[in-house]
Length: 305
Image: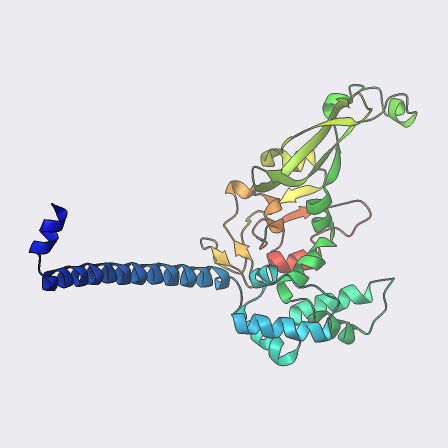
C-alpha cells in the first residue's frame, strides 16, 4: 500500500516536501542559534559589569600586575580587595607614577608613626614613598587605625570582670590577691553573629573532660556598654563627618557610611567591615595611655568624642 502511495506522488512533489522540511528546520535552527547568542551575550555583559562595579578595567588590572611582577616580585596583590579600596582614578595615577596617591593628611600621620617607631628608623619622606608603592590610601588608614587603642579594642577586645563568678564582694580583694579565690573574667570583642560583626561577650562556664574551657558567647547590650567597659563612652552624635547627618554612601576615604544609632548607641564593630564604616565614634580611656581619641581615629571620624 505504501508503495502504491509513493507511486501516486510525483517526484516534483517529493522534492518540494523535502525542501520545505529542510527550510523549516533551518529557520528553526537559526532562531535557536540567535536566541542562544543573545543569552550568552547578556550573560557576558552582566558578568563584566559585576566584576568592574567595584574594581578596575581589565587593561589597567593587567598593566598593574605586570608592573608588580617587576617592582614587587615577592608581594601578592588581591585585586578584588584592592578594587574595593581604591578607585579607577587612583589606579590610573599609580600606573603613571608607580605609587598610590596619598592625601597630605595621611602623609603627615604616617611620618609621625615612623618617627615614633623605636624599632625601625627611616627618613620619614623616604618611608612614605616606599609605602605608597604598595599601599593605597584606604588600606593604609586601616593599618594605622589597627595599631591604636581603639583598633586593638575592636580586633582583640578587652577583659572585664565576670560578676556571676566573683561572689565575694564586700570582703575586699584579699581572696583574689592571695589566690585563695581565682577571679574570673569575660572577654568583650567584635565577633561574627549571623554574618554581622557585633560586640560579643565570651564567658568561661566550666571545664570539659579534657580540662579545656567551655565558653558561652552572647551579644553585648550597647546601651550598657559604658557601664560594662570602664573608660568607654559613645560620641554624642555618631555619624560620618564627611557627609551630612541624613545621608548615606561613601565618605572621603572611600568607606561605607551609614547614620549612627539612636541616642548615640551605635555598633563600633562596623569599622571592621569591608569596606570599613566610620560612622560610630567612641572614646576609650585606658590606664597609662594618652587620654582622648587617637590621632588616626580623630581623622577617620572627623569629629570630637
